[in-house]
Length: 270
Image: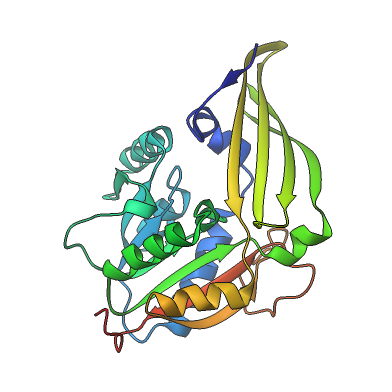
């Protein structure tokens, strides 16, 4: 019998196996290029919102950035801390929900929120709260770099199913993912079922259900401006490319959109 678990608690345990071929190195190089191209200030301190198991935070720390990562999954934060300790890196990780983010008076030169994580803000209020929280934790002129799922690609495919296999050392994962898109709400409903196999034996089966929201560019631009950010650009993300984040224009087949925004210091919210 499969086990229905809170999101990312079981999935988080095997996350690094499932995404063992994810090119974190290339993604971090692209993010650094965004820093250099769009920032008007020197970037040293970076907040990783929805950091997962710390893949980006740890690599950016190795490049000299002072990193703090937050994620709502206790399981993933636990793994992130272990990885940072094993690398002897001074990365701080905290279990916090981006919609209720509170790091007291900590301020950062930039914040990142990658791999579609901002899509977990499924209501207008949740997105506004997240943007406001990030804004509060940025210094004057700080950058916010994130990516999101576009509505257009999901209108073209309202439902889908994928089967994915990954293996690391002696553990093999088979992941079956089913997705359905609600056109009225722009909500993506994901049902994930994973089989954990060691040798010839299925050691564990578990299921998770995730809800994420897709956005249009005009919609995201509106939310950014409403929450005192200046949108600097929207770009195509291509996970199959050796440079996933780029300056390429978004087209009808774009499955993920990167956004670079700057804290608006002219806002009365400041």
